[in-house]
Length: 232
Image (cartoon, rainbow, N blue to C red; front, side):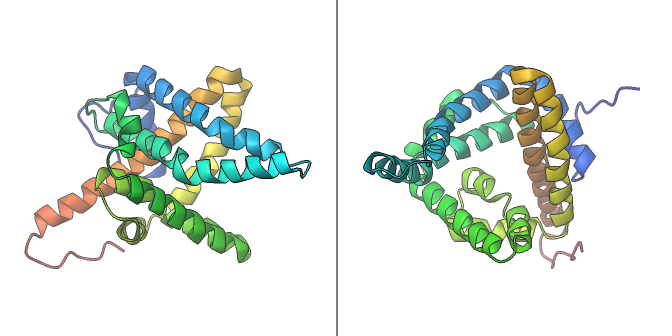
C-alpha cells in the first residue's frame, strides 16, 4: 500500500526523512532539478582546479589560489541559497530561483564566515584520526540551514546545530551511509539517475532539519514559561 504524506510533516527518522523527501521531490521536481544543476555548475570551477594539481607551475599555483578564494568567498552563497530553496520545497513554501543569489545582497558575511568556521572545525576533526571529523560533520550538518533560515551568525549557527543534532548524530550518520547505495543506484541509471539521487539525498537531510525544528517549536509552544524537558 502506498504511503501518503499529504498534510503531514516529516518524521525525524531516517526513513521518515527519505520518504517525505521523495514525496516533495516528485512535487517540486523541476525546481529541485534546476537548483541542483545551478549549484553543480558553480561547483565545477573548484573541481577543475582540483584536477589540475598534477604539475606545480606558476599557472597551477595561481589557479589553486583562485579556486580557494572562489570556494570560500563565492560558492558558499550559491550552495547555501540552494539549501534554503530545498527547505522551501520541503515546507511547501513558494520557490523562487532568485533565492539562490540573495546571499550576495543579504547575509553575505555570515554565509562566508559560517562556511569557513564549519570547514575549519570539521577539518581539524579529520586531522585527529578521522572519527572526530565524522562526528563533527554530523553535528554541524544544519549550520547552512540555520544561517539561511534563522539568519543566525556563524558561532550561533554552530552552537544551535550542535544542540539540534543532540540525540540525532547516529541518525545523521546512518542517513549519510544510506546515501551511498542511493547514489550508486543513481549512477547505474546514468547522469539523470545521479542527479535524482543527489536531489533526494539533499532533500532528505533538509527534511530531517525541518522535522527537528518543528519538534523544537512544539516544545516551546507546549512549555512557554517552563523549562523544556530534556528529550534525551
